Image 1: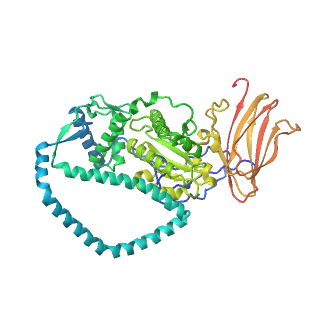
Image 2: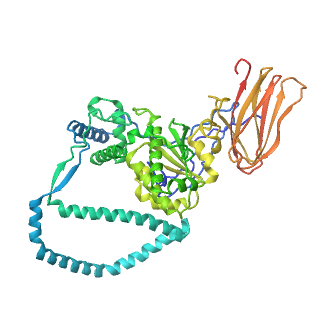
Image 3: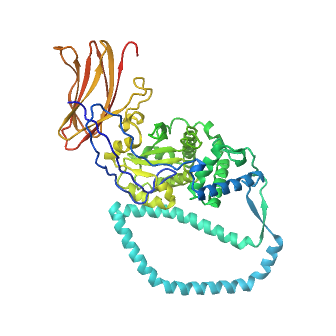
Length: 545
């Protein structure tokens, strides 16, 4: 029986438009849409086709002509502000406040009675307002508490969620209180101060960001690409995008990010995150492995935390170097987050640290992540996402995809071709692979209770056949044979029938033939579900090897 090839019309998987929890840009979770698979349309064809690329998130165009009129105007306005700030050398200048002695003395004279009376009136007004609102607040709080308890119970044990929420919120409340205190102090001294420019923050007209000139009048086409990232991160609000750009430049200068590529962090963190291959749209792929062991090491002390953060920023900078920051180029990365061995909800100190990493990346690397895919997601992930969600922008959260353990291979193969997906995640990619280069990966579908065969021709009298095969979810019987072309010749069993478990990885095998014939791979689907089979092969002869 010849292979029956499946043609996918469209496969809508477990895409989660949620708020991410672990990494930037774009990152945190709102509500998760569980992955569902749309029924595939199957057609019988005489020859197998390559794996069809599935629909993916489409990033906006960076070509000026493709922008909306309002977006063109916003880009023009931002370029004008940036040009003026760079030319006038005010881009990184901060306004410092200094006390005015004259006003301080006047303040001292007025203080005694006026302030005391004012404060008494404020206290009395607050007491009255609190009495009036006490009953209403109590009633509303009771309703809100009921809703929160029900939601928490649906996600994970109430006590765990409450603990995480309280600890994370406690940290944020401290920050808020500090900020409020600063605002109050600022208001009190506002009338007493004068503004003085900090002369140390000078800017050269050749200033660059990620190797791209920022001065618009230089006419570099990459400048628009960078500015559009900041505009999109702030919904094309020019002033907010301009402030975000200035803060990013100051942050990079403060932390010496432009020198970070030359720093050596050793091999201790190499397994925590690494770049490997590209996705179906040529985005470089970054794999982030979140494990208890890594976080115990990296978050154990302030020094280790600082080292981890700088190493993570370095990895981001290395990823950006692989991009083509021009209109029409690949300008963002795909981030994979493996939560298989991630620390649980009880490690609130780690999650607070992770939240800070996410926010820093989101604020200083806008629109550099095309999508965040979370795999091997545990049950408590949704609760953590609910906690982290308020700290992420809606645009960041819209790029999240979540896959439970049973859907990992299927989800990753939707975005990453099998020859670019590492073997540990169900693909065929291995380090320093010398057997395959650009061979096509094909796919067949095996219906429940049926068998399919894949034939690999061996026309030469002498040669070596090499093949890779993977079945998503396996649970099939599998065998390999060499069938000679010569009539009456004996069939050679390469791999006797073997029952494959659900968690089996890809198989690579080879056979050296001494006569013409073919390799026949047989997949017998004994399960009640259809199975996707991915395979590729290569025939090596004396002339080709």
